Length: 220
Image (tube, rainbow, N blue to C red; front, side, top):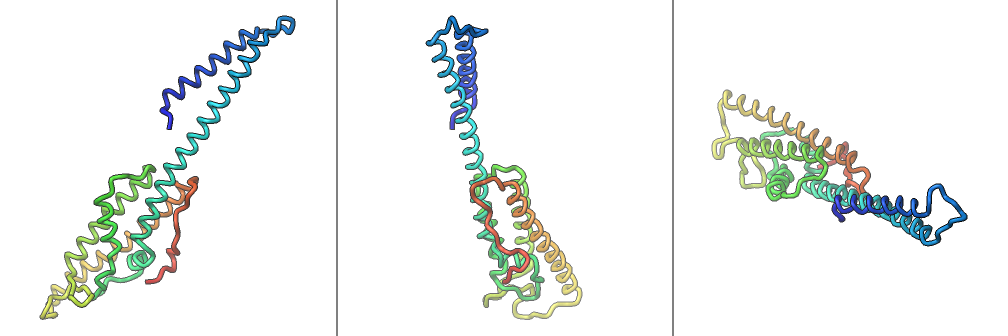
């Protein structure tokens, strides 16, 4: 990609050459004093100027498409982490006494992805939404596994190992924490939908497209 300053210099030079050749042809034009060399320079200068403009226009379009396509590729990578099953769990599955160990595996994958992600989205609006989703995912995941522990048989629970009995007071506190977690899970689903919808809108002009899964009827 040609730097912007040299491109501007080339454009200005082409225009000045065009104007100079026009003067050489003679203004106003007198056909009785026609100068073939000046006319050749005029035509050549015009062709050079038009070529620069067309090349600049084409180069800018290609560069913009490359930028947006890179963002599309990244969004499509994220859709493989928060897949339709993970989205369904966030949006529709109530947090119960026992949960599957892999219910939030997609969130863990996103957290790991974010930790090694050194290339931000080019689109600032998409980047800001992405950062907020990642922050809230980490917070939710930390709070959930601060309350739940794997039972070693493929499930996680808040119940103590060995003696599952807890007092009514403790049970109420746990239920309160679970209610907050359910609200945060629903919010994460909404944020995820917003990120994908905004990405589709912002990156609409790219030669690639954001992949889809049916966010309304996704099944676990």
